[in-house]
Length: 286
Image 1 (cartoon, rainbow, N blue to C red):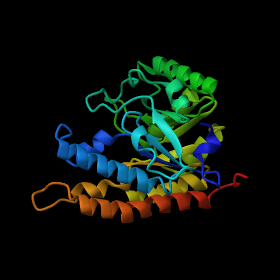
Image 2 (image 1 turned 180 degrees about the horizontal axis):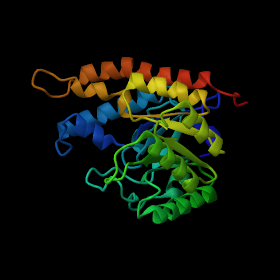
Image 3 (image 1 turned 90 degrees about the vertical axis):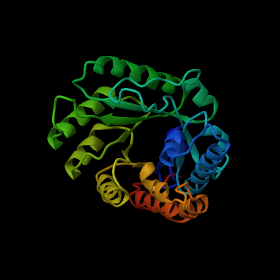
Image 4 (image 1 turned 30 degrees about the horizontal axis):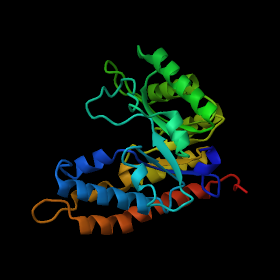
C-alpha cells in the first residue's frame, strides 16, 4: 500500500493503532480461554475497528486478529499490518521479534502497508544490529512497493536520568541513522516547536505524532507538531482507555456501557483528531 492510500483526502495521515487486541482484553480483565471472555473481547475490538475506521485514514492492525474484522470499517480506510507482535514479557529495549510465518510479502499480498515498533537509542550496544534490521525491512518494503511505518520509541538508558535536551538529541540521531525511502516515522512528542521543526527539516517523508500521553495533552502536542511540519497522528489507547473503568456491579466489563462510550466519546475523539490534522494540510490530494 502506497502513501496516498494511507492519507486523508487532504493529504494527512490519520492513523489509529489497534494492533494490540490482547492488551485491550487484558486491561478489561478478560480471560480469553473462557468463551464469555473471548466473546466480550471480540465484540469490543470489532466495535473499536468499526467506529474508529470511520474517521481514520488507515488502521494499524495485527494480522492474526485484525484481518478478520477489517471488513468492519469504511471501504476507503487504509490498512497497516504489524510485522512484530506485542509481548509483555519481552525486553522493552530489545530487538523486536517478527511474527512467525508472517512478513512484508504477506502484508503486500493483503494490500497493506507494514508496521514495526522499535525501541532504540543511538548509544546502545544493539544499535548497529537494529539499524541493519530496519534497513533490510525497509528495503524489502520498497521492493514490494509498500510503505513501512516505523514507530520509533527512543528510551533513556538505565544508567541515565531523563533529560529533555538529551532525548531530543537522541531522537534526531536515531532518525538520521534509521531513515529510508518510503518510511514513515511515528515519533514521540519532540517536546518543543523547534524540535518538531528540526525533525521535519530532517525528513523527506511525513512523520506522525505517536500516542504517549493522555488525550487533552495530546491534542495540544499534536497542534504544535502539525504547525511545525508533522503530517498527521498515530493514536491508540488514549482514545478508548476510559472503557476499562466501565463495570457492572459484579466488577465485570459493562458491554452496553462500553459500546455506548465507543460510539460516542471514542468516535468523537477520533473525528476530532482527524479534523485537527486536516486543518494543517498543505495541499489536498487531487
